[in-house]
Image 1: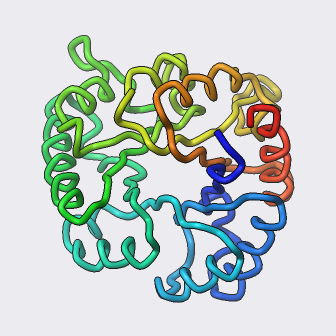
Image 2: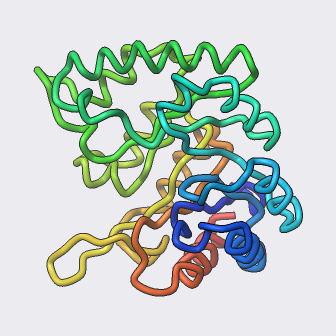
Image 3: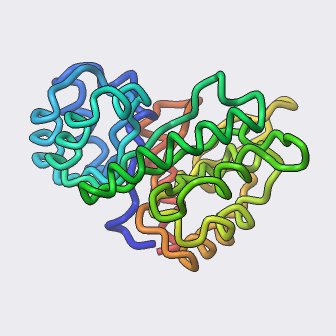
Length: 253
């Protein structure tokens, strides 16, 4: 991990990225903290050209995205064009449809769809990546949903974007999960977990209980390209949360 490949997942700032003016100010604040890249997700209906213009003006690269499955299935050409405009290789899907989550057959069906999408994106020099939550770790006849996705997708066409928080909530050691996707993960989501009043809550990197020294080492070992900081819910100003996470990652550079 280097300073230049630590990014912010804009979903963290979704309430501050609804308009062009909001996005402009948010990107400037992200850059002022010291980040050099962002993942585009959760922003308002802003033209791709404007997003690129504002990111460039702030000196930020767009390293990855989250897009809707409908965009990949029914608006494929425009999705490709947008990523090309942004010089963004990684096309992320934040979750699979509800109807695919309740059975092994559902996961297998989605694995086929993901492979088809991934192969089409490959033809344009892009990489499909799948972002997990905790529900992928439910077992179906001895295999988790994540096992099925890893085993039944084309390993060259479908990558993974593991989320350290959700992997842990799913009952799996993030370090073990990272090694399981060796060769298939160019982007990781760094997210910490803290216990407050008997409840698990999202926390700034280094302020919770996850072992980020071991997590970063594992990511280095498998060749992760982008380390993306995300915090779904912040208990303080989200820009302050991002600054804390950035500061706490410095010892790992």
